[in-house]
Image (cartoon, rainbow, N blue to C red; front, side, top):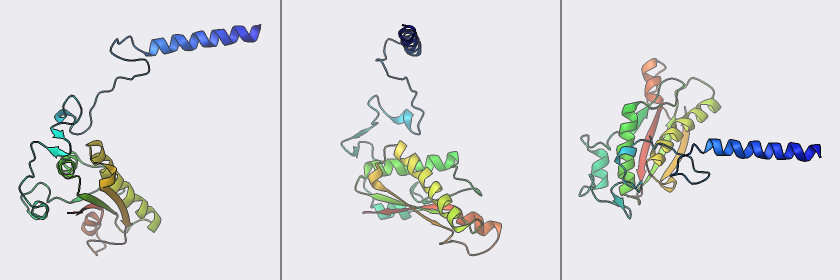
Length: 189
């Protein structure tokens, strides 16, 4: 009898807690949680979350009419920036980096046949294992930013080279700065 009383009290308390958590918003179904979309580029999407994209073709394609190789190599193209640098022992992107990646995301969303390899790198300081993990973390941060903007996971491959493929071979701050990077390599075009 006493066990039944506690079970009824626990159930009543659980129901009361669930009702209190719904917040009384009539637009929500039971179990839904209101979420503000503050992802990068959220202000550019329409009500359906797809923006100006329809069936894989961007209606306002800023990249139309130019060969992909030209877009990637022309220094005046926003896609020419294909290397992103990181601070020591960090995998954080700056606001400028996120803006540049938003352009890459728009391009990849308009060209679903194009794929991207993200090469993560680190400087020579730290163990080989640590640097491989750090290079992967850096590449995965960029992968996450791109995927939050609609780039499909099938279009992205992450590889970490750690300290194994330095761009600069010196043993000073400038060389280390140049080696802490993620390089974007476009394929499939």
